[in-house]
Length: 293
Image 1: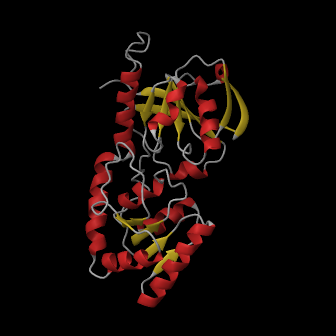
Image 2: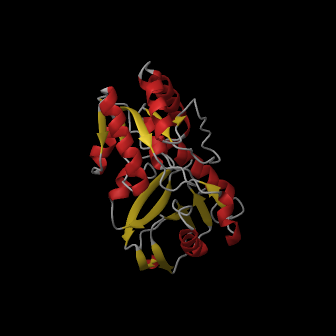
Image 3: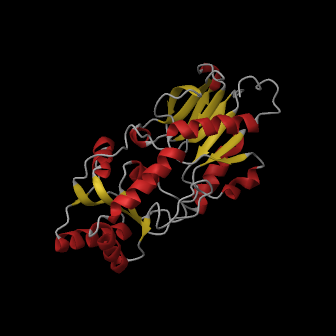
């Protein structure tokens, strides 16, 4: 096996989202990495002052400039499907990149850059999201918005009427992971309709049943509605789906199928190996890097 690549991971100065992110979460054979934190906007980083690396990976949600950049840069985008304005910011930030890595947005969103664009789907940290004893029948753990509060209240009312245990609210990352992993059915309402939330894979890694509004078709996800998750479209179908999952323990079948799929295809160790292969393909004509990739 090739030696691990040395990566410099640049991300924003808050660690909150990093705690939940499977990418770069635990040691893997393909990479070793160090972290550099920057402010979210208008940062300037002089790459002459950073540790040696074979590859620089720049996270989403930070916008600024890398000076004296000599090392190949991979830019990882997550939020570009949120709005046209967000995509424009991501396109601008991608200008220095040699490779653009896209979580769940359409790959052709970045075709105008002329850079190589590859799928780099969210990966689960299965050391954080894993099956727990199922204490709750239903969970709704989405960050609240006006639209989500309608579904949150519907879940509360349905569970009260049917005497199902229910957990909701917003929590620190470790509590969130524990509550999500301790629930039979996790109800999800996408905030960005054109993107696939990280919660989708995290629920499956916890061997719970995901009940969600419509998910986008993301290349490489290979999720099958009715097999790996179930879908609702409004408050009325939400109750019917919850009954179908909980009254006869059908949630276990969905949960097991989702768990098997994510453990096989969407953990960090699997994604890291895929990224190493992506780098080999992207830089195969770069003779100075051939031995590394």
